[in-house]
Image (cartoon, rainbow, N blue to C red; front, top):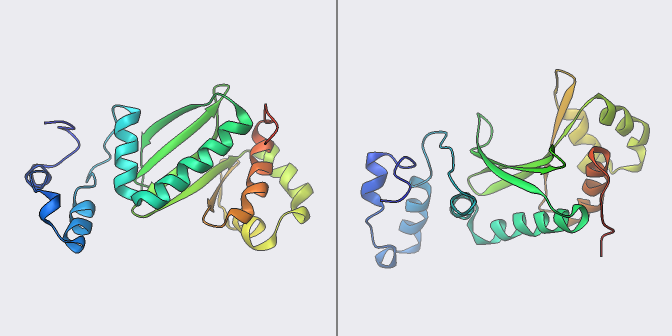
Amino acid sequence: MRNERRYTEGQKILLKFDRAKLNDEERELLRRVLLPRTRYLLQTDEEGRELALQMLKEEKFCALFALLDEIRARYGELDCRWTRGDALWELYYSVKKGGEVLCRFGLCLDTFNLIISFGEEECARFERERDSFPRGAIQWTYDMAVAERGRKNLMFDTSDAKIFPYLFRLLAYKKKPSKNPS
């Protein structure tokens, strides 16, 4: 059986159900029940994408990877890896450029956020330029982020594409884009 360690014994029984015979409500319940119950470490990128699709459904899954494609268009080749979650997120998708984390995506059932981690240098730059960012979407997120060990993890809901230009400006604080956006 594939993903042997990913599922509990009870979940393995549910994998045998024929989804075609289930109604929409039963399929939704099965989708939720088959999510990993432990902090499972994904073995491959394909397995990570499969789990992300199961967690987010098609529309949000496509939105996540459309945003990732936009980041890739600006930064070129990226090193992306799935990592296990924590108390806040079930799963992370880390995006690295040049060996350093550029950003991460935090995923849980039916939602994901873009997470940009700021050190002291990025925080100081943001403070100098804060008035050029929208108050609600960007400044509020920055102000509400807890500073731990000199770092702030800014978590952005990306459902409103109007904030994308600001998010890309924040990403440029971490690393300058290697390409001009088209």
